[in-house]
Length: 283
View 1 (tube, rainbow, N blue to C red):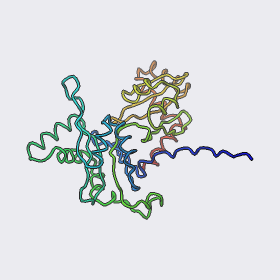
View 2: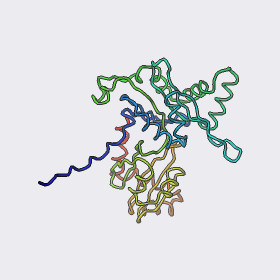
View 3: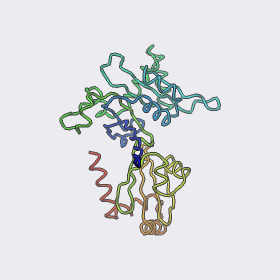
View 4: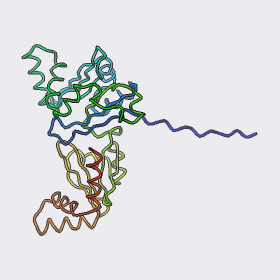
């Protein structure tokens, strides 16, 4: 008799969030994306992803997710160049744990607040972070489960019960998807720089430079453009024909290439349909 070998089952992808609300269009530093989870926390996976995303040692991240607290980024060449990573845990169990990052200016403000009011740096960091958030989001954070109506939520989300944790994210990681508008108007979702680089046939170095600094990159006769809006990368790929039109506008009207591409994109019905779908999906 022949034994039939079963195909090895592919490991299920890690699901960190099942509720995502985008507030990235607000002014920095309050421009965040709220990523929440109603199902039980997968602590090792959660810690691993946050550690990779924010360059915090894994053991520190795990401890913070259990106990709460802050991680102050070490000095570089004798200077502080980054702020802190924080995890706020409601020890009464009444609310979800929350993770966020303070930039250098916010960190300085939190230190000053802690000294002036005689409170812990962790408490001060929470206050400084919350006061930068959009009013709409701050109001939701005062309500249980962000004020969501569970009767309208997907059953798979609602069955988890209360929100277990909220990560206020700004990064581009494999577990945090972003959209790119393609020449034909399709909205293609990528997670992480590697997937983004593979989609467009560019190197990891090119992808990292583009999404961190913005600008344009020629790819097989087409052009990939990234605009940084409120510290968030907005990416679109333009066809060779639209790239040629943009270069003509640069030559005849003296426009910056990015402005010329925007003008061409707004005239392109296919790309505009993609933008319209993106706006509708974000409502």
